[in-house]
Image 1 (spheres, rainbow, N blue to C red):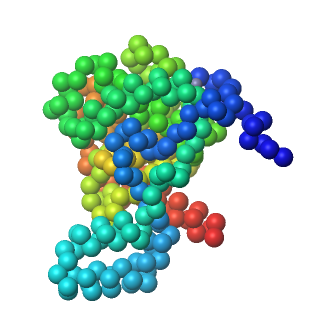
Image 2 (spheres, rainbow, N blue to C red; image 1 turned 120 degrees about the vertical axis):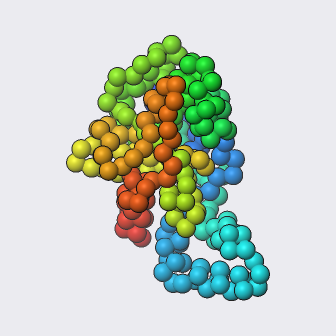
Length: 264
Ligand SMILES: [Zn+2]
């Protein structure tokens, strides 16, 4: 039976039904957010390699031959521990072409934020409407997460309405800038994830520079992150890294690990 031709997709933004060819093929994280050369970390392989000492031996062997440690680990990451997400990477059909085109405008705003590393001194010079587009772009990214397929979000109107300046729903959005503490062994795990607490659910979406968490409860006081709405203020501080406890990022990494191992 050919299910492909009969399956209708519901666009996560406008809620209308479309058949396959009217949906847009989304890559996540989106290429339009500056991730041209994205890779996803092969977690299982990484853990195996570290446990076996394989990597340590290779680094040692190559560094005695005069290679820089950072070059070696980057090379190992590129050649052994990562799998290219493109062109056959993870894609989803969550948005219709029209909504995807509409969100493209927001992505342009996000790219401005991304290109200046979210620097408050520069971002404060952006127009207010651009700052709102940045916020909406990030909220919108969570619609296309594979982990959030069944979630009903209350910020669709906020995204769809270009003129809406406030959002009073239950979903909070926080972010940190990546640093060494967020990147296991300095390797970036770029991707998506989900972790469930008694209080609610946390989704994660990250790119080369930032880690974003969307959650439907008040952030745990032990985790230090910047609220995305802070960028509307005259001044704000971007938290760098996930701190010693690893933040939600570590929790999500752990739960991914756990599910990858239990799938085998
Ligand atoms: Zn749509």
